[in-house]
Length: 264
Image (cartoon, rainbow, N blue to C red; front, side, top):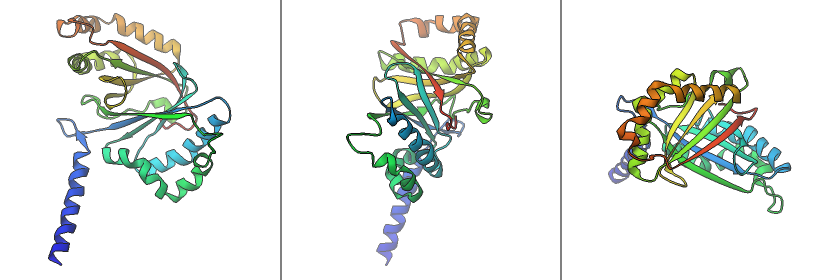
């Protein structure tokens, strides 16, 4: 009996330790989110509606029940490989995010709603391929911010930008730039800042990804002009610490529009 109690206590302690290890915090103790950026590569035609129905009616409600919320869902408007559906999944628990797909089959409501998508035949697949990356929120921007227009289902577009670096040193310094003034310059220029994430697992590392929101392309272009001409940005980008070489070697710049069921 004592051995059984010891094993039970040990397993409980191990589970608690794992839960603690899977949660990151800022130095001040504020939880930092983890993000999965998931891409469903599709073909024009029935696939698009089938996948949209699956994500809106089955997947997002099930993820919300697991505590993964809010879930962003976006169509790729400008960028390579269209049509593609992007999902943004946030959680302060790495374990929750990493095991979500394993837990979904145990959700009866999910399985019922997901049946058409899950049972699509190989000759008429629901999607071409799925890709995912895992990120952790920047210390200085530990949790995503939902644009105010989302609650009113207002008009909005999103810019998803990924900065690759040639070395780990360059990457760390680019992340540092955001914490040493770039957040504030974006704020002063009126950008809607949604999230900033450092890629832990994904292609073309080292890199970081962040998301901005605007009402339309005209507003986006105007605010980028304000940003580029800000004396604080010119001083920051000219600092020898960040200008000794090109610390960003490649930029991916995608334009996304939210689906009708997106929670962001």
